[in-house]
Length: 117
Ligand SMILES: [Cu+2]
Image (spheres, rainbow, N blue to C red):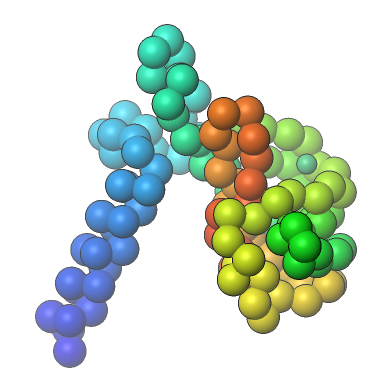
């Protein structure tokens, strides 16, 4: 049991690091965006909290009344495209959510959504 959950945790950590394409040693939370050649290929991730205001399936997008997103934008209500339509499964208007924004090539997309209790 314990052994299995340890493997799962390690797998999740590896996937996270790979997906973020960052060096874990110097890019912990809220690290400044890379500059120079690295900036051209970097994908930055930001964490936000907010309330769902609208869900659209074509194209897949979610409108969120969100709080401050440190290093990215102040509190506001806005729509984000999502990286995968399945992220919207089980999410409804007025849900309180934690979400991750992926910033790549000047485009912002929601790449993870977690419902808050
Ligand atoms: Cu915003």
